[in-house]
Length: 93
Image (cartoon, rainbow, N blue to C red):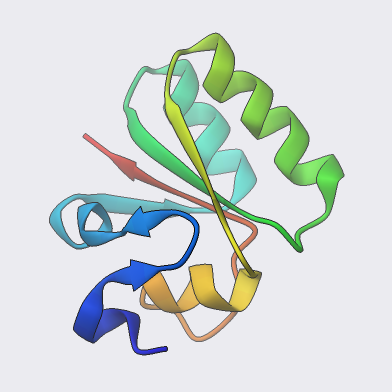
């Protein structure tokens, strides 16, 4: 799937928000953004280690930030414009 062309990933809908805002990739950076109330939406890969995604999902719930699941790390990495997979990504203010 060419996410740069259509901006869609099944299951989580339109990822155009990633093109319009600064994007953070990685659990540590996303946790910091959630603590600072800077995250707009968080995307998590279904095939990522639950030890990584679980705490991020819990922080999203605690901070009332939308959390969407993406089919794979490879899909999420592509949507973020990187050449490697990503377990988590966030659009930030």
